[in-house]
Length: 118
Length: 112
Image 1: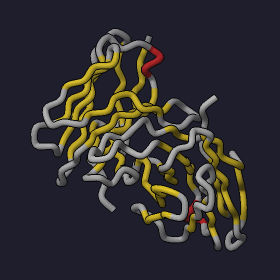
Image 2: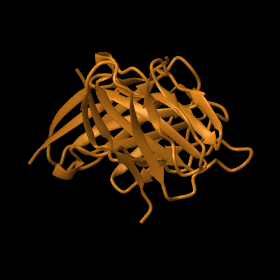
Image 3: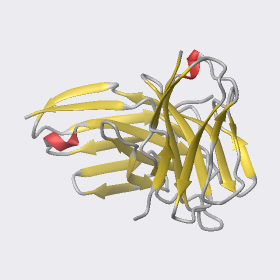
């Protein structure tokens, strides 16, 4: 079954304690992204990756790190979490658009990770 | 960072009514996407629009890519209870295949 998996689904932690949220996709997609969702703000992109070892900042990258060492995995790292990073996080993946077009293939989203930083 | 302006923020309608929501931006987008998010789940793509003026349907859903490339709307006809959820528009500029910008969402409630 084609899917994007995230772990953990729920996490409560304390300020300053480093954490990693894992994301994995089994569809051989080139593109992967991380979003955070907050009430009234919709989804805001944190980081995205267009291929292995290629990552770029989204709209709200401060306080986050990512890595893309393998095509299927795109972990989100919070080196020193703070309460304002309490949010619902989604990982997503999609195929690279055909050359010469901006046609975005269906972006598959993971089930979400609800993070609370105390 | 830039966001799309999506309206309305919420809607409470009776089953069978038609629904309309829209997104506007001060910038041009080359692709407009509409997603639906059910409670406790990630967004799912409903409709993708790639050309200015394009009108595309998916069952009871119809979406249009504005002529100016700065707006898009989504219509749902004859709403049913399972239409409940949050609807998001998203835009993509140029060849930035990974950099989606989302609207704030429209929360739809349907009364049976």
